[in-house]
Length: 307
Image (cartoon, rainbow, N blue to C red):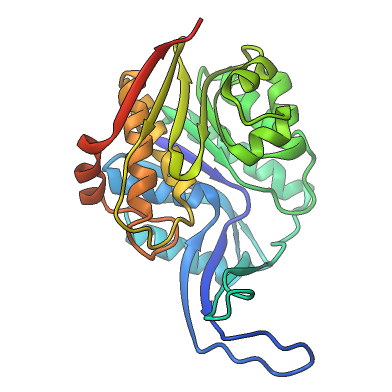
C-alpha cells in the first residue's frame, strides 16, 4: 500500500463567471467541484493505476465528509483525524475575459490544536507498518511548526520506509536538513531553492541528501535523477484540456514505479505518462488508466550516466 499524507485537503471548484466587479453582486453561472489537495490527487491517481492507495488527512466538517465520499467512490482508502471546522475551498474562475480567466481564490483551511497533531502522528505510526512508500505533499493548516514534514519523515525512517516529498518553503528546508528518499520540484520551485532551474545546480545544492530527484519542466517534460543516472522524458499530446494537478499525477506515477521496483527509465516514463494523462480531461487532478496505457509507449526517454 502507498500512504499519501494530505495535511490540508480542499474542495477545488471550477467557477464560471464573466467578471468580478468590486462593490457589486457577482453571480457564478456554473460550478463544478472536485476533491483537492496535492496528496489527494496523488492518491486518486494511484488508485486509478490499480495499486492500494490510502489517503491520510485532517478531515474538517461537512466539506471533509464530501471529499472523503468522492475519494472512496474512486477506490481510495481513507483514514485520518476529524476536525470541527470545515476543510478549505479553492476556486478557479473561468471567464471569456482573459484578464480574469484562471483567477484563483484560496481559503486558508482549519486551524489545528496540539491534540489534533498528536492524534495525527499516532495514527500515522499505526499505518506505517502496512506501507511501502509514503507520499507527502502540500501545505499545512495553521497551528503547525515548520519542521512537521521533517518529523514525519524521521518517523518513517525509524520504520525503514521511504518518503517522497512535494512541498516548498521552510517545510522543505527543514526536511532537507534531515534528508529523505524522493523530491519533486518544478522549475520555479527549483529556482527558489537553489537559484537555478538547472538539474546539475539543484543536485549540488541537495548534496546527496535526496536519492531521487524529479524536476518537471511543464511541456518540456521531466528530468529524473536516480541511481546515478540522469533521465529526460517527455510525451507529446494533441490538446491540453486542463493541466491542473498534472504535477501531482506525475508524482503518483513515480511513486508507482518505485513501489514496483521499475528501472529509472521506466519510472520516468510512468511519471510523464501520468502527468500527461491528467491533461486530457477537465477533471481537476485526475487521470484515466486507459490514457496512461496509451501514452506509455509514446514517451521519449533518454538516459545519461551522471558523473
